Amino acid sequence: MNIMPNSAAARDIAYYVHPQTNLRRHAEVGPVVVSHGDGVYVVDENGQRYMETVAGLWCAALGFSANERIAKVAYDQMRKLGYYHTYRHTAHEASIDLAEKLVQLAPVPMSKVLFQCSGSEANDTAVKLAWYYQAAMGRPEKNKIIGRERGYHGSTIAAVSVSGKPDMHADFALPLPMMRHTEYPHYYRGHFDGESEEEYATRMAEALETLILAEGPETVAAFFAEPVMAAGGAIVPPKTYFAKMQAVLKKYDVLFIADEVVCGFGRTGNWWGSQTFDLQPDMISCAKALSAAYQPISALLVNEKIYQAMLAQSDKLGAFAHGYTHAGHPVTTAVALEVIRIYEEMDITERAQRVGGHMIKGLQSFAEHPLVGDVRGVGILAGMELMQDKATRTPFEAGRAGAVMDRIGRANGLILRVIGDRLAFAPPIVITEAEVDDMVEKLGRTLDQAYMELSAELSAK
Ligand SMILES: Cc1ncc(COP(=O)(O)O)c(C=O)c1O
Image 1: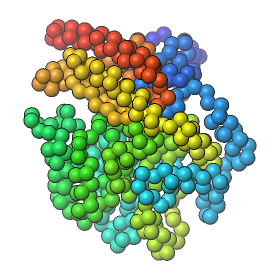
Image 2: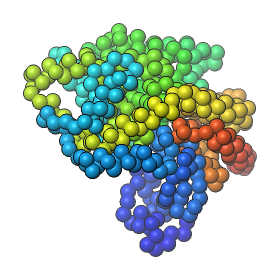
Image 3: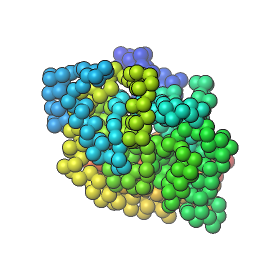
Image 4: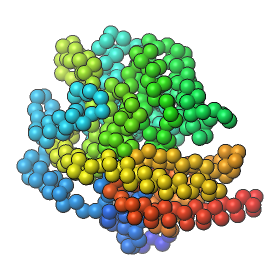
């Protein structure tokens, strides 16, 4: 790539460290500089338009266009009260209104809300509260947290430790020593020949129980799960999986924390993934679509059981010794509340089911394509697995098909979310059926071109 001196790309290379980016390679190739958004498209500084098939980072539920209504709420709030904190018995209306709204919307009875700026911080807070709760119950040794292989809960120290992502632990001296990981429910790749979804789910729950017993139930505080694993590959759990997992948690008195950072606010066709999969969590973290990504905000909802333990800790320790300067920031909370009003007006769950159903049908039309091993989705969220040999479920050399799809997709005007050799689809929920058709058409072309390239590579070996 030809990078002009003093261009935005050159200054980016000079000054900015990019997350989740190969830094050595970035210094050579530079960034795609996105200049503005237009509905489900983003446009780069050269005017090239790309359809965003995963709403940025699964977050821009209302797309990328200017939104005067949200901008006005932010502007008005900045003029009225641009900042105040909520420490030491202070409050402001925006955060009160949003907390009340979230408790009303919660999928199971929830008692209170804590605010942070990111999904990672919400999950770190949940880990701390799981420990705090167990300490309040007089069993501080019940402190292990179980996540799942390939689960993703964020980049902060506790959240990434719960995440089953060895690539994100390497050379960071992680995971923390009290974190454990159980199997992840990828039925298509993991099932034995002839094993039904239900039997596979039983095996997953048995693996969890074996782990809890090996560790000692008296040492296991909490279990974390995304209703649909997002960054792990957009993996929809098999039938009966969560019912069986929750029975194990209940048996050993292990808290359940549902990470709704991606699934919350319509993505799975209900307000919450917990409704779609009938979850009974003790805490729920959410972020991303909470503000449609117009502001950085996350929330952690806790049930009465957790809250009562927190109250007891105040009796013992004094102030709840936790917090963030920007927790419940008035601009972020005002914007999130307005975004939720917009979701209610547009009937976001109906839209996610209708347009998402159309999207999943479109993606499933590639079921017979020689590259496509599996397509599964729920709401407006789906995963597609690319396979070298479908008949024997043989994958490509790790990540090869995904890398080829990524490059060809971009040339065809599609930003694809490639996770190894899986593609995740979670476009802005405002996507229209006609835009879904356009996405499916471009994807079909990309699959055909990638197949030709990958086949040529294999026959040259
Ligand atoms: C399920 C899930 N939890 C937590 C996070 C972390 O959120 P953030 O990047 O806002 O810290 C992510 C981010 O992708 C996520 O997908």
